Length: 389
Ligand SMILES: *Cc1c(COP(=O)(O)O)cnc(C)c1O
Image (cartoon, rainbow, N blue to C red; front, side, top):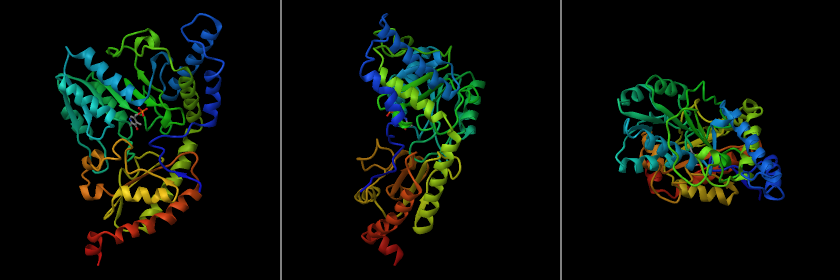
């Protein structure tokens, strides 16, 4: 049975073109980019080519791109780096209650070190309000960190507005754009972004590689010491194959982005309409329009999300109940709770995230398989029988 992969928000396959570009750097092109001889210089050149491609994808200058080990590390360098360098100016940070744990756990760690963090609420669609943001700003606010698009429900934030407010107050603005890069056109200048995190494996690149955009002149301190690679922001011998792969992935997703997003949107809308039509007691989570092109997120009443996933897996369908990081725990997602979705409904959530490789046939198959699974699970639920009979 062919696997229907519908979990592209968790990770994406490496695109064949990306793999092809990487292979020489795993074989004959093994030089250390810091070495002076040809093999080293060629590796260095490959890194700088990749830097240009990543910069181009988000409207940055190449020297503002720092390669890291992924989204989590980029988020850590951004938050901790700004906190360390600006401690004397202020100790207040603003973020949202629906961030990825790479942000939330880092913010909590900073609270233990004496920083104060405001976690902005969101509305029922998962949107942050500009009025709430403005009200939260204080004299001593040094950083605003709001994600570009949410990894669970796909809601896209009003980033340009948030950036404008941050700029007006002279506050550094970071955005975790791991889910948005490659799917939504991003321009760090138009959007007033000072720091931006992205990750290779969410855009058809390899795992273990990412980047942090650092606007020139941003007041920050590096976290690690040890070498002068990546202008000292990220010391240690560079992951050359990974960097080359990320560069190629950036170039690839930058080509015909609108066309590719359009294809995802069509499949997504077919999936959403089909599910809402065929199944009752179900709701779509996240914003109906301002959402990632490939994201469909549902909550089914009277159902346990985990049983739904296991049953879909038996049919060869790979899906998620929300974030890969919270699955395995039975706590409902902090994102859904922040959106005001009751516990019992949040438990019945299903995230289907589409990618390049998905077809209309895949969607039809899901629409054929999902309704009887939901019905079977509900028939076993005493709550459902009480409510419906
Ligand atoms: C996946 C993800 C991360 C973590 O990226 P890694 O490269 O896996 O460390 C951070 N933020 C968001 C929004 C993500 O979706």
